Amino acid sequence: MVPRSQQHELRALLGLRDGVVAVLEAEAATSEDTAELRALRTTLATTYTGYVAAHGPLNRVGHRRTGRVDPDTGQERTAQVRPAVMRLFASDPFSATVRALEVYDAQTQTAVGAAILTQRVVAPRTPRLGADTPADATAICLDTHAELRLDEIARLLGVTPERAREQLRGLAFDDPETGRLLPAAEYLSGNVRVRLAAATDASREAVATEGQDPWAGNVAALTEVVPADLEQAANCCCCPGGRIVWTQTLNAIALDKKRSPNADVSALQLQLRAERLADYVSRAVAQAPPLTPEQRDRIVALLRAGGAAA
Image (cartoon, rainbow, N blue to C red; front, side, top):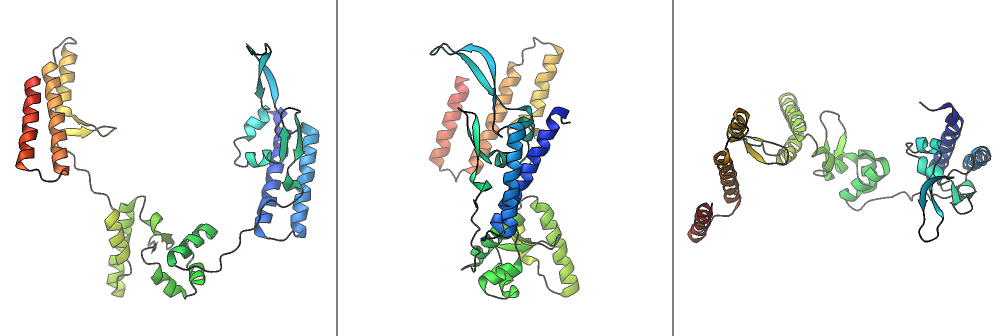
């Protein structure tokens, strides 16, 4: 809840936010200074001037005593403090844009309006007239519209939508659940198991009703990226961090400690270390290329030496 003492200034800040966003959007939409754009800029400048007259600069700060002294100058150190309403307004996504409406001098504690109040600060982006490759067309379309639009991609490539869809094979996929055309990076990520199930169902239905399978590419691509199932040993469980914990041995240690806090569990601890070492060696050998007899003998000798030392 906003304190009553801050409500008036917060409303003024929100008005500045709406004004500066409107000006930026208008400048980005056209390369000409239209009458509408000039009116928006004048309204923003007037709103800013009224705010400063009523509340002071946007970036103003106060000072509070810290109780500490600068050892070099002997003067008391102070800390800068922003107004409480500005700390509240900081949660707004455009708060930094609003504060940029002025150039503030901390030494003199004065501010002058930024260039946006009197002139254009955003140059409109030059529209792309075409693309050399389907990948370029996909990137341009995503950058411009934040989604894939088949008609726009066809225009960039100078082909029909049907031909453009063929050229996007592998770069984009039709989602059978939403009907949207999604870039491969989006479609082949996330919960791919759910997407694979949906594509498989759509594939079966299409074959049964139409005699052809337009979803075969989806199924094949999703099958390649589905991660392998994790296999869990019967006598162990996984805990955060990826460590393997042998429940039987740990339970035995815990039970002995519960029965007698001073119980000697050194043998069980040694067994636990041996189990962990055995698992580590098994996984390392499974991941390593085939070993030569000499290498195996070397490893056996190292393990025997370690066991003798223990």
